[in-house]
Amino acid sequence: MNQDTPIIFSDGTSFYDKLGNEYNIHSKGLFILAPSASGKTYYIENQTEKDWIDGDYLWPVTNADLSNDDWDYDMEVVKEINRRSDVITYQAKKLGFWIIGSSNDSLKPDAIVLLPIEKHMEYVQKRLEGQNSNGAKKEDVDALLEHRKIIELWVDQGVPSFESVEMAVEYLTESS
Image (cartoon, rainbow, N blue to C red):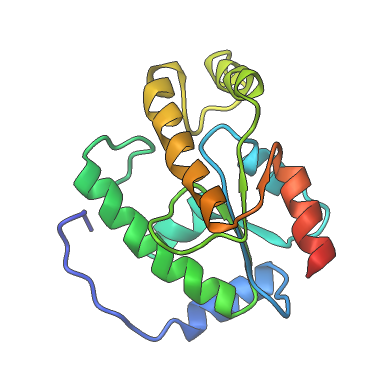
C-alpha cells in the first residue's frame, strides 16, 4: 500500500481488542505530543507497565502513516499523515489508551513536551553516535526546530508544556 492508495473506514474492534491485550486500557485516554528526539521511544521501551503506546507504532500499523519515511518533507503528505493520525489517536483515546507521538494536525493533545533546546540537540547527537537510529538526525534539525514551533502553539490553547516525557506523564497520570 502506498500514500496514494484510497482509504475507507472499517470496524476496528478486533485491532483495538488486540491492542488492549498488549497495553493497559484506562478510564480516560491521553495523548502527549512531542517532537522527534524527545525521548518518547526511550520512555515507552523502559516503562514498567505497558501503559503508553508509541504513535510511531500505532499510526503505521493502522495505515494512518503510509509514508514509510521518518522524515517526509512534502508538506501535503505530512498534513495528510497528521490528519489520519488524529483520527486514530482520537479513537484510541476514546477507548482509554494512552499515546505518545509526534503526529498531530488539529486534535488537542493533553500535554506537550518541549525539551530545553540544548538537551534536545544532545538527544539528536546521540542518534548520530548510533545510540538510537530512529527519528530526527542532524540533517533534520531545521525541520525539527520548525516542528517545535508548531507544537509550541498548543500552549496558547491551554495545553500544559513540560521539559521531559517523564514530567508530562507524571502530571497527566496524577490528574487522571
